[in-house]
Image (cartoon, rainbow, N blue to C red; front, top):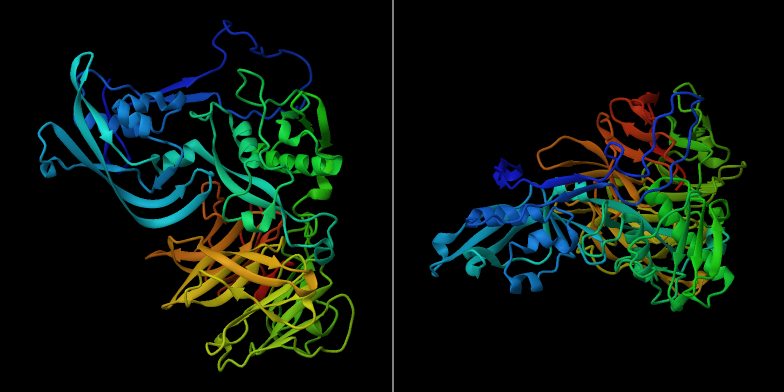
Length: 627
């Protein structure tokens, strides 16, 4: 069998693809096609594992060093248990030391370059592996975007084999090294769910603490290391606890040490024909009360919903002896829903030509371009305060507006008329760009940045009222200035546009609260870059539980709109049609609602699902959804 030219200019060793399914009439369980009767829609049960398997080719007798290198790189993309084929390219010592748990992702795959001229040993080869690193996935399955060069080496030596001397790899980097296309073929992003800590129900108005999405990557097919399908991988990842970055601000209702207790020989969980899942747990969870058990089941249920996209009938948690610990049905879990306090907004908002706050009906059934925008009740819609930027509380009862000169922030009712309030925050910056940013609401609090170079501040108004208190940014800002901000509904994450050396980039920070709610010490910590591949980021908005919509451009490129996960990954991203010269973008948590944007050429525009951009108002600015 020959070789074929692959990505990155290297020769690829062919791999074997096996499709497990029905072959003629030899296999049982194969359905025949009925030739009569009515057509009925049925809901398929979730299947955690694709029936396709990909296996690498073992090294042939007398394989030369370049074939060994190429074969090993190709075998790393396979599905064979314990990466058995890949290990055949390694010496026994190297195989024992190699841990394929972590993943390095390169934009176009690793490119091997023969470095034999640099070897002083006869009978040895060194190959350099080079490429552009775009991401790393650690042992917690957490994705971290990277924008750097990659340079590692593979060292080969000749060893005694059953057929005489043979080339094998005895020195290599740890983990898998995959091209981006292979990574996206093999892995998928899923959200695990945990409860936000430090966010009281009084502040958010919710019956339970917010549930927060924690994105990780699992294999689409069977995991070679554990032999678990993607459903079981995801459940195991949930039980192992939140990723290190999110851990300080969330908690799990599963007791520490809780793990799956599968029957002997079993590797995976399975849904029954009612789309119900039984999850057997070890002794650590055997004595939890019903309230806590229901919280555990809710974490599982929402995690599995994101994974399978099917309607999950119910989750049954079982004790180590097989008895039922608790059962939670899909309908019963709605009290825990991550979007319950934001939901689908009643209106879409923007500033009209008189710089008043106006609104349009935000129904998912009505996404056309024939609605009339009307001013909101109260001083922000009366024109008494000319505004440059706005944010609407998620309850849609109050809004915050920044004055035309960006010097003052006002908070007022938008459901009843009233007198203009005194400014809640003022800035002493010399110019508009050195004053207040556009504000943002989380589940209950109002946030704004004062960009005065002489005293930059990140401010929070608890409940949107009272004295604005400064929020400390602990690390990750490194002298950069906050230009814009968007806070997540759960109140534990904040997206920041920061400018340094004339370049504006996107970072995500963790919001930590300590102490009682009325006197909480709040800080933003551990900022991390979300879109390092973008040279310039213009605007950002939250677009659901763990997703952002970003306007920006890559180096030398044109402006583009892109969806990103909060970990910076784009593998499940939807493509967004471009609009002209977008300065602001807004998205609702409900993905059935259109995307809103301000275009310098077209005014206020919106993009309904599956359609094209439509102009709502030829003039206007600052389109927003609540949040």
